[in-house]
Length: 243
Image 1 (cartoon, rainbow, N blue to C red):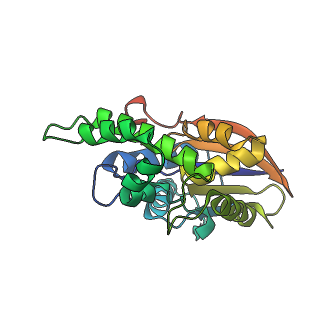
Image 2: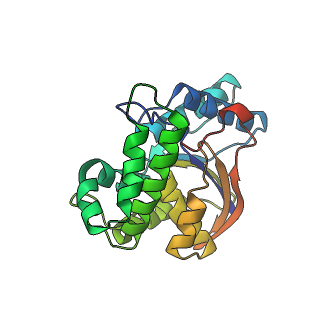
């Protein structure tokens, strides 16, 4: 059997214009991940990232910890199929339209908008109301009840991630240790594949994934088994985040 260590990217910049960069806390999360793995002398035969900057930078901070420890760290290989879905684009570009089609979203959207008004923003409140709206919209997208130009349908996204998983685990020598960095969406699909879950159950599980969480799978040929889930034991308590 071989081992896949699957990591969600460290905290990105939710409150900034460019989300796709690690926050200061995110950099520290990735550094602590790398240090914990290096301290345990975990050796990787292959390192893979999704194409997003937050994926690649989480890998880079991990690599730096290995370099500091004097340990080898393979050059990361980018697999585009491990990129996140575009459900957030629906919120940015088409929210008013989909509210017209799904009126139950109106209250969630208004709560989110109100949380962002004024100068004294409560970041926890903004995140809470965003998450509730995002979960509701994502659930509709997964059920093919939302179609937005430029956003791939869920079935297409699911197939893409499955191809990315095949590229990640395929042709790896027996006993390999593979480290991969991605986002909640692709990781949810991979969890679903390993556990045989329905879409909605997989979604509920995926929402629990913390930033820089470490998840371990055993694999061989077409077999994929979850061995440990959502570990943040490598992080100090005060830097554990969901978003």
